[in-house]
Image 1: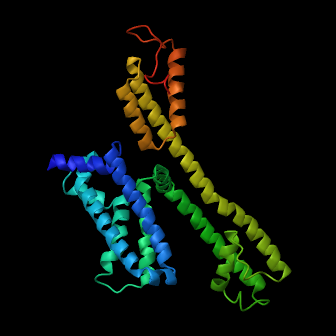
Image 2: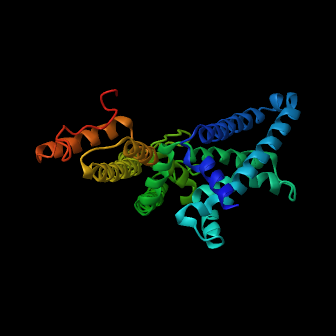
Image 3: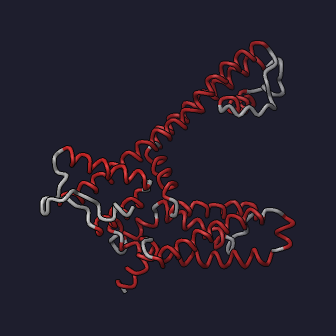
Length: 318
């Protein structure tokens, strides 16, 4: 049983062998096909014309996703993070990707016991798109950045909310008499404040008085900065996360160069680490060249055993 569990873990998680790439590729295609099917199913004429196909495809997808979820919970103990048979599996089940996998199948099983609005059910099924996070490293990096920058983003959103309330109060004071139907209360004015601060500019409600327009000008300028603030936070966090991953890869390259040469086995290990970290091939090559340059400057550019220049085996062919 442990050997079988290890094989399934390699098949689902490692993605280094052809069978593993085929399995994960199939799941990725199935996820994309599900998203397309859900979108097309929302068109009434298409849904009525191909209702049997959509139902059959949904049943097939649920079967595959359920098997995948059960297998991932079973094999997760192969990961050192979840080595405990009970606590490890419970910890895995509350991880982000496990919750995403569960949400991908939960609406189907809920509909068997509860009467759910088909539109609501369809939207819940769209959550399956988040399963792609496991197959696209860039999405995993973005989620990691959002997790790290969560408190800062929360602070920025809180400031935006405070400004929206203040803007709603201000426009209510200056525009209440001119447009009582649009700015009759602060809650009613809050719609205008939010769309203005976020620079959406919906246009259904606009100030008519000179004071209201001047106030709107100030709020619009504040909104430009406030709308850019979360984007700047995410961009800065993304840059720091990529720099951290480059440093991790750089450390691994240094460790591989401790004996003066990077063997083919070490090169394969570095490639595996590069994929896990989501680094671009050119970035990885630049890090490796930089480490060779440092060794060269330190006078360690020759192998201590044979005296030949240091070289990553296979470098000349690449």
